[in-house]
Image 1 (cartoon, helix red, strand yellow):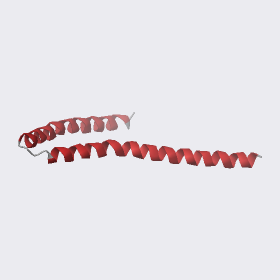
Image 2: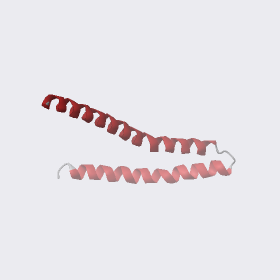
Image 3: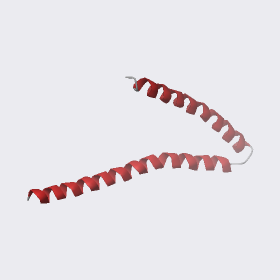
Image 4: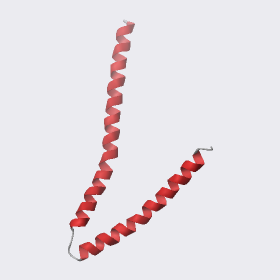
Length: 82
């Protein structure tokens, strides 16, 4: 319980900070697009896609390595029993 409260407080503090920055990004992008410069918006969209893909890719890679390691251990355990 002593570790849960500080972790929860930190998580809430970071979450509220992150929400505040979305309005700043949106206003910057809207002003640039209205002035005829869509380049920054495309760059930020690419950045958002990178932020979306990498956690999933890391989870898939770790899951595959875990599966492969568990499969190898099962095979060696089976050989030892025979």
